[in-house]
Length: 62
Image (cartoon, rainbow, N blue to C red; front, top):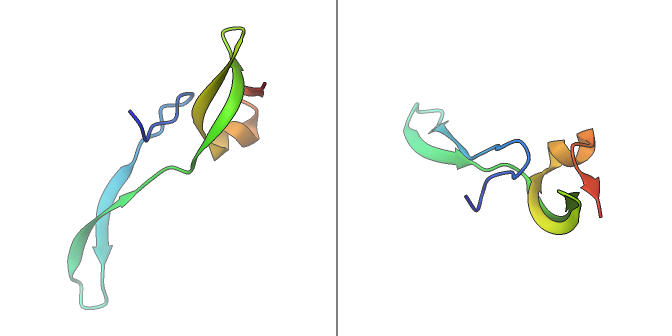
């Protein structure tokens, strides 16, 4: 749960790195999470939130 957005639930995505020789190795793409002080349930709380939620106004900064 440490690399998950607390608002939208965005998680790491997995896939393959593919070289020019078409070699495949596993890769993980992590969401861009930021620690933000936000108002949640009427109280100021530190949350890990993705930048898309911050930009869209899904949270209210405290």
